[in-house]
Length: 114
Image (cartoon, rainbow, N blue to C red; front, side, top):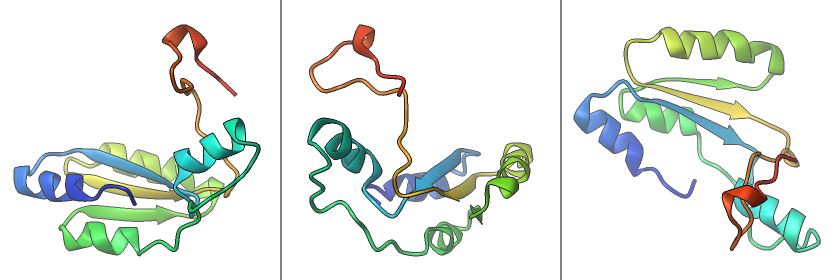
């Protein structure tokens, strides 16, 4: 939810960009940093999100939401097969983290895989 202008750019330029949003109802990476580096002292990261699929469709993009793991493979295949821009929202668990990541002030040799 930190940026939305990419949808407008995709619409304006008519490019076949594929967008995947991992929605955990948090500012995901900020929450992850607070978990891993600040002893789970969460502050201002839980979000009430809009309907991202409806927003993407407002930009005339093909869009789909996945809420079950067993739906994911088919949705990704559909997205990849599309010749047009595609927006895929994948609802994930609130505590799921995204790796790999590089801690602040670190180098690629300090990459964290879990």
